[in-house]
Image 1 (cartoon, rainbow, N blue to C red):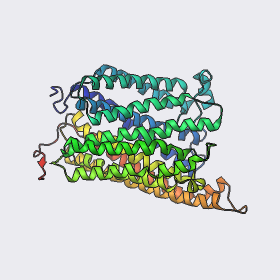
Image 2: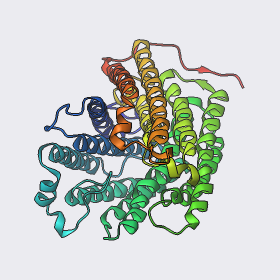
Image 3: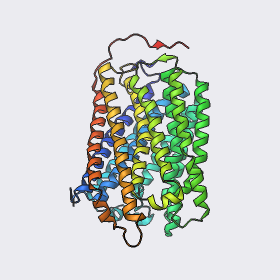
Image 4: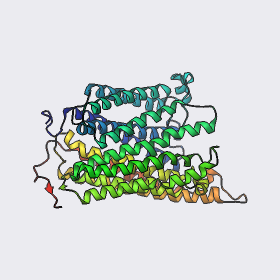
Length: 475
């Protein structure tokens, strides 16, 4: 028992707290820049030239990546000591890496906002090792090198903790995912002059992160929370986890081929990419069955009902966002018309929110009451506010997805399906979508309101009111 905080099994788990707090701050920033972009879709010169659309988009997507990485790292620092049944190898190293990563992230975002991108490339001497200028990987080379250093220190810290402690399926799956995250990021340094080859390996970072190794991290986090809140035997959870990660790796790795359709890769990828990416919904469907089965067969009624809701919600939303909406335009004959349209944006928004944003908020929802010394759960008022945040964010994201889907369908019909010279130019097509973009902006405001509810739910001070012990559910 940890004397400083009796609700934590090990004192070193407390290092997760600054990672979670900073992740949520960056998440708020990402949403605000998303709203700026939404306004720029309908009011083209909004904040121009201070924040052009390309800069707002760059900040929006980079904040997404960085806040999720902070969330994953915080989750590992909380989860691994408990799974390994020992203190974290070096809490001081974890805090040092937090400040290094936070400083690098903030300086990079300020560089995007305050310095023209070409000037930022010159300022950071990108010519020595050119890596900039690619979507999602816009970070200066010096920032990428900093990320590598942080990842190496992080993996060393987590790895030494696992080597000296108990090995469980949950912790080993998470470690595998984290190693894969670091390894595939190294391809961001490979920037060949041939555009087709560049795009081929660019997807080895972007796709093999979000549709490969990140799914292992998601699965391990979900399994950890479900073990804690349901009391189901670990062996049952581990069997589900093995099935899920096997399907995720097989379909995700080979399914990378659906990104090779139109970049000059061999024609065989039209078949390979279509078939295996069509199977990618299966691991997400398995996650839905896994979560609901564990909750149904639970042995205890955990007082943190908000965390239980997040755990179930992330599987359903991920299945629809990453699975169903991904399948809608993953087959080559369909993707020929839909790639790069608002349908891609619809899939991306719901998939990232459901699969990764929600799983990070699930673990934060479970861990934060303990990290703050409140016990297993916050008080009823805080949980009610958090549940409001869950529904506002989730329903708003569903509306954003549906509106972007409608916009994508109209875009395909007007811009790509039309023949005999009747196709509209891009800007003329976009002008026809203004009503949908205004509605999408309103939904974005609803999402911000939900996030604020989620953040305000942490305002509780002091311990939660005494409550009856967790009720054991009869078999």
